[in-house]
Image 1 (cartoon, rainbow, N blue to C red):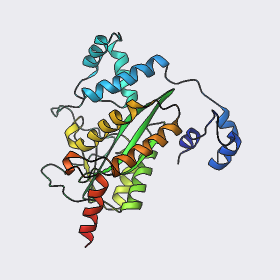
Image 2 (image 1 turned 180 degrees about the vertical axis):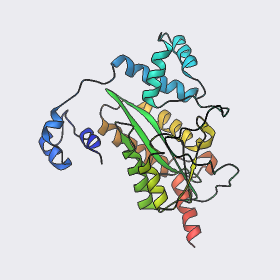
Image 3 (image 1 turned 45 degrees about the vertical axis):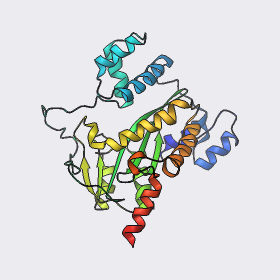
Image 4 (image 1 turned 90 degrees about the horizontal axis):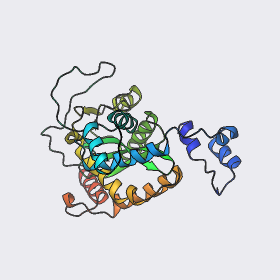
Length: 284
């Protein structure tokens, strides 16, 4: 766990344990827990980011111009540059097929997309991942999940206050430690998933790496569908006050999602039932 994540766990409002004791358990200097920076994002921007998140989920193909126009319909007047700035901060990008008009960024390695026309019908054949934005009362978080493609099961997840690669690597390591390794791992070309730390875990475990084309939501469609479920069935119905509250509530939701929520595409079975049944069948 990174220092930022440990610091985010410290509860300052009506804590069960004293701040001093929390710092001892989290191996943090007490002074760091009492130091509170001013909000990096204004309340007005946080409200705009929440609206943009909902609009992007509803209209994932819209870029900054059209999102600005949608905000105007809601009575929110902002210029396009502000929308672009907030979208960058949230990690949002319009999703649509694009012509190959520029060369790939040579700052990171790019791998081919391996899932086209591939029949994916067994657990641990393909895992996928992505990051989404999670609003809380006085800020926002980023959520990453590792998903088994065939069963839709969420194998691991992490929350972070930053977009650094650490929390993605932790989620990946946890999934591998608990469920073994997949044959293929599919990601987009985000900086977290093209980092040497993340790629190194995949390569050390001899996992084939598949990467989406930039902006092509269909290449990772099941994770996009997961985010829709998480947002509409959990996040938008709650008002998380703290990181701790968000983590606890999401833990309950993912337990429900895996073990109780039937999927139409799985003949109304739960992801966990499909994942474990097929895993046992393969082992037999």
